[in-house]
Length: 408
Ligand code: HEM
Image (cartoon, rainbow, N blue to C red; front, side, top):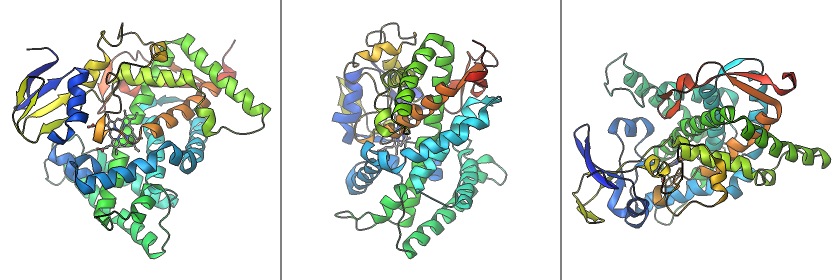
């Protein structure tokens, strides 16, 4: 009953839990047409029902997916956001120096800025601030009880969503009126012309911009918080990562130039630390699908309407695929994982289009942080809290110390 596929109930709904790589592939890839993504209605309303996550196949989904993927593929972000991401890091780091920070909070600040610049391209400071403040109110409703009564978090969140709609709509009209569509995903969506869908509507564009910020923000910030925790707890690893970045820095000094995209492709140890963090923390422990008709999956009958949950964390923590799974060991990624066993960014039609951007954000931050700073956990950071993803307790309180102030 508790094998790789078993049935349970969550909040009264029958759910099929899946923890074999093969069955996961079947649900997310091979038979993806039989399993649609499913989210709570309240969340769909807050993000916007026309966002890519809520679509199940069809012309609209495939057009959107192509547009979002093309915006965040390596060849695009290399030119569109690389410099901006580094500038954000270089501005942010000195504000942490000699202070105690809540790592999660600061990583959210960072990830939000990167998400906003990727979503909107260049925007005026005042527009950025408006969007940021409204988004902050909107996100408070994501996991609140959906009670639409004045004063509740959900009500405030719906109000913020309406205002965000107006703010982004003004931005859209400004760009359309000026015939200058600008950069970011917004520019791509404004220019888009499909075969069957001639042009995207304002609300389709707005839902997808908010959707991308939602998808890019807490996820990347939570993983980065874990990267800091694991490196703090593994001093030798931190020193080895620093050495990798010192090697790059020496090269930059010799060649009298700044960090480039190509340099970020030459950070193998940092890349493995990120992979192992994605595996070990598995911040997206699972995802939800719903059977669109009666389906037979590996000998089990799944009735239409039942939820199906591929359990990423269980696969990532299976000793069959990752020996000694509770040990943090980036060297395990010196060998490629077995097919369909490493799924931090999902798989198939709904897999994450932002994985390369997320990795780039982490590499650039690691480069500058390890070269110039050290961090000390202030309180025992061994517990876990859900914010909404699993993160170290209290968001990981750390003192940031300039490296040149550390006695040798
Ligand atoms: C480390 C950070 C991130 C992690 C762990 C992550 C993980 C995931 C996963 C597992 C999925 C698939 C969910 C499913 O199949 O139900 C997904 C979807 C998605 N992610 Fe990410 N993601 C991250 C960062 C980002 C970033 C930076 C962006 C922005 C560009 C982004 C945009 C999206 C979008 C738009 C989808 C929905 C795709 C669709 O439904 O077709 N993600 N992400």
